[in-house]
Amino acid sequence: TVPGDLAGRAVVITAGPTREPIDAVRFIANRSSGRMGFAIAAAAAAAGARVILVAGPTALATPPGVTRIDVETAVEMHAAALHHAADSDLFIAAAAVADYRVAAPADHKVRKADAPPALELVPNPDIVREVAAMADGPFTVGFAAETHDVIDHARDKLTAKDLDMIAANQVGAGLGFEVGENTLEVIWPTGRKTLGPMTKERLGEALLALIGERFHAAR
Ligand code: PMT
Image 1 (cartoon, rainbow, N blue to C red):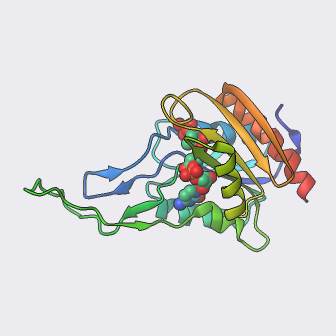
Image 2 (image 1 turned 180 degrees about the vertical axis):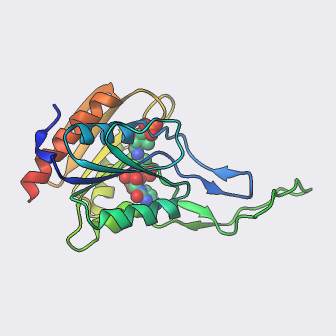
Image 3 (image 1 turned 90 degrees about the horizontal axis):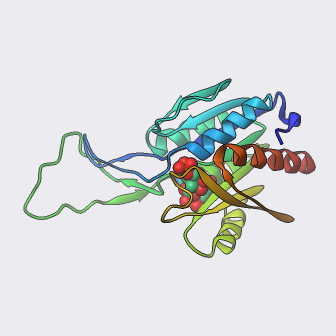
């Protein structure tokens, strides 16, 4: 199912979690392993695309033919992703980006005190929303990770972030994050398709084939 029609196209993909520092040794993160986004990057490179993978901290090896940029925080991912999205044909946001960061992380290790400290959080930039809003920007595909009402919440995100397409997955105990298999409900303004359940590697290929179809239909 690897489409040949993305050959030579510039594709930017975000993958993995972000880490939002609390102090010199602690951070807020999530359960994303990066596997879904890395699988899409591998499929895109195999299809002949020029692939830039902006990756949060993961243990995964870089797929063959993929240019990888390692980042840690959402603010770093935002800077790298926006920079490269400007010259890309497709943007695929598979990363689990923290919606908030700690307002003032300490540069030393915070010592245990009598009273538990309060963490003040501030919003992070919404990377995929900003890419979708770029003038002459890439065909933009978001993900939606939902524990309930998957389709309704995904449709809301498709509209609110003005995306070309969204791939929704159910997450929670043993689903979506970390595990090797996944199911995606892919939604675009005029259609919908279920992919899976299958391994994230095969799902990466199937999703990319569908993205290729919609990309060409939209141009
Ligand atoms: O990495 P794995 O272990 O393989 O797991 C895969 C996955 C479950 C992480 C993946 O399939 C997935 O669903 N990724 C998106 C996770 C997520 O954060 O979803 P969300 O519904 O919170 O965000 C919606 C979309 O906005 C996503 O495309 C996200 O990348 C993007 N976003 C969110 C916040 C933000 N500040 N910037 C963003 O670009």
